[in-house]
Image (cartoon, rainbow, N blue to C red; front, side, top):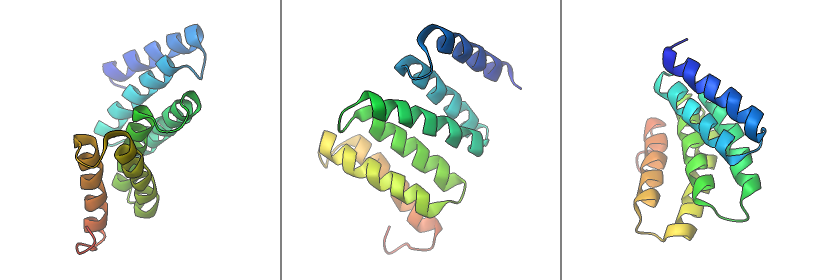
Length: 130
Protein backbone atom coordinates (compact mmCIF):
# COMPACT_ATOMS: atom_id res chain seq x y z
CA UNK A 1 0.00 0.00 0.00
CA UNK A 2 1.40 3.36 -1.02
CA UNK A 3 1.57 6.34 1.30
CA UNK A 4 -1.00 8.10 -0.88
CA UNK A 5 -3.43 5.21 -0.52
CA UNK A 6 -2.94 5.18 3.26
CA UNK A 7 -3.83 8.87 3.43
CA UNK A 8 -6.84 8.43 1.14
CA UNK A 9 -8.12 5.56 3.27
CA UNK A 10 -7.54 7.38 6.54
CA UNK A 11 -9.30 10.48 5.24
CA UNK A 12 -12.17 8.33 4.03
CA UNK A 13 -12.39 6.56 7.39
CA UNK A 14 -12.68 9.88 9.22
CA UNK A 15 -15.18 11.32 6.74
CA UNK A 16 -17.38 8.24 7.11
CA UNK A 17 -17.36 8.70 10.89
CA UNK A 18 -18.13 12.41 10.67
CA UNK A 19 -20.64 12.47 7.82
CA UNK A 20 -21.94 8.92 7.39
CA UNK A 21 -21.78 6.58 4.41
CA UNK A 22 -24.10 8.42 2.04
CA UNK A 23 -22.74 11.95 2.32
CA UNK A 24 -21.48 13.83 -0.73
CA UNK A 25 -18.15 14.55 0.94
CA UNK A 26 -17.60 10.83 1.48
CA UNK A 27 -18.56 10.14 -2.13
CA UNK A 28 -16.07 12.76 -3.36
CA UNK A 29 -13.32 11.14 -1.30
CA UNK A 30 -14.24 7.73 -2.68
CA UNK A 31 -14.04 9.22 -6.16
CA UNK A 32 -10.52 10.46 -5.47
CA UNK A 33 -9.53 7.03 -4.19
CA UNK A 34 -11.14 5.46 -7.27
CA UNK A 35 -9.08 7.77 -9.45
CA UNK A 36 -5.91 6.70 -7.66
CA UNK A 37 -6.80 3.05 -8.16
CA UNK A 38 -7.55 3.74 -11.83
CA UNK A 39 -4.16 5.41 -12.36
CA UNK A 40 -2.47 2.43 -10.70
CA UNK A 41 -4.29 -0.01 -12.97
CA UNK A 42 -6.30 -1.43 -10.08
CA UNK A 43 -9.44 -1.37 -12.15
CA UNK A 44 -11.69 -3.64 -10.10
CA UNK A 45 -11.13 -1.45 -7.06
CA UNK A 46 -11.66 1.69 -9.14
CA UNK A 47 -14.96 0.34 -10.50
CA UNK A 48 -16.09 -0.54 -6.98
CA UNK A 49 -15.36 3.01 -5.78
CA UNK A 50 -16.98 4.62 -8.83
CA UNK A 51 -20.16 2.57 -8.33
CA UNK A 52 -20.39 3.69 -4.70
CA UNK A 53 -19.84 7.31 -5.74
CA UNK A 54 -22.48 7.11 -8.44
CA UNK A 55 -25.03 5.64 -6.03
CA UNK A 56 -24.62 8.61 -3.68
CA UNK A 57 -24.59 11.17 -6.50
CA UNK A 58 -27.77 9.71 -7.99
CA UNK A 59 -29.58 9.69 -4.65
CA UNK A 60 -28.53 13.28 -3.93
CA UNK A 61 -29.74 14.69 -7.22
CA UNK A 62 -33.09 14.85 -8.88
CA UNK A 63 -32.82 14.34 -12.60
CA UNK A 64 -29.73 15.32 -14.52
CA UNK A 65 -26.62 16.29 -12.62
CA UNK A 66 -23.10 17.23 -13.68
CA UNK A 67 -21.73 15.01 -10.93
CA UNK A 68 -23.79 12.03 -12.09
CA UNK A 69 -22.72 12.58 -15.70
CA UNK A 70 -19.06 12.75 -14.68
CA UNK A 71 -19.46 9.67 -12.47
CA UNK A 72 -21.01 7.72 -15.34
CA UNK A 73 -18.12 8.73 -17.59
CA UNK A 74 -15.52 7.64 -15.02
CA UNK A 75 -17.27 4.33 -14.44
CA UNK A 76 -17.64 3.76 -18.18
CA UNK A 77 -13.97 4.47 -18.76
CA UNK A 78 -12.90 2.05 -16.02
CA UNK A 79 -15.19 -0.65 -17.39
CA UNK A 80 -13.73 -0.05 -20.85
CA UNK A 81 -10.20 -0.47 -19.48
CA UNK A 82 -11.34 -3.80 -18.02
CA UNK A 83 -12.47 -4.88 -21.48
CA UNK A 84 -16.16 -4.82 -20.51
CA UNK A 85 -17.16 -2.98 -23.66
CA UNK A 86 -20.94 -3.41 -23.57
CA UNK A 87 -21.18 -2.31 -19.95
CA UNK A 88 -18.80 0.58 -20.66
CA UNK A 89 -20.85 1.77 -23.64
CA UNK A 90 -24.06 1.65 -21.63
CA UNK A 91 -22.58 3.97 -18.99
CA UNK A 92 -20.93 6.22 -21.54
CA UNK A 93 -24.11 6.55 -23.59
CA UNK A 94 -25.97 7.54 -20.43
CA UNK A 95 -23.22 10.08 -19.62
CA UNK A 96 -23.40 11.43 -23.17
CA UNK A 97 -27.16 11.93 -23.15
CA UNK A 98 -27.10 13.54 -19.70
CA UNK A 99 -24.17 15.79 -20.65
CA UNK A 100 -25.99 16.92 -23.81
CA UNK A 101 -29.07 17.78 -21.77
CA UNK A 102 -26.97 19.68 -19.23
CA UNK A 103 -24.54 21.50 -21.52
CA UNK A 104 -25.80 21.33 -25.10
CA UNK A 105 -24.04 19.69 -28.03
CA UNK A 106 -20.96 21.93 -28.21
CA UNK A 107 -19.39 21.50 -24.80
CA UNK A 108 -16.07 20.02 -23.73
CA UNK A 109 -17.71 17.45 -21.44
CA UNK A 110 -19.84 16.19 -24.32
CA UNK A 111 -16.73 15.99 -26.51
CA UNK A 112 -14.83 14.05 -23.82
CA UNK A 113 -17.60 11.47 -23.51
CA UNK A 114 -17.82 11.12 -27.29
CA UNK A 115 -14.07 10.54 -27.41
CA UNK A 116 -14.35 7.77 -24.82
CA UNK A 117 -17.22 6.18 -26.74
CA UNK A 118 -15.15 6.28 -29.94
CA UNK A 119 -12.25 4.55 -28.16
CA UNK A 120 -14.52 1.75 -26.97
CA UNK A 121 -15.88 1.18 -30.47
CA UNK A 122 -12.44 1.52 -32.05
CA UNK A 123 -10.94 -1.09 -29.75
CA UNK A 124 -13.68 -3.47 -30.80
CA UNK A 125 -12.79 -2.95 -34.44
CA UNK A 126 -15.97 -0.95 -35.02
CA UNK A 127 -14.09 2.02 -36.49
CA UNK A 128 -16.87 2.98 -38.90
CA UNK A 129 -19.24 3.44 -35.95
CA UNK A 130 -16.71 5.39 -33.92
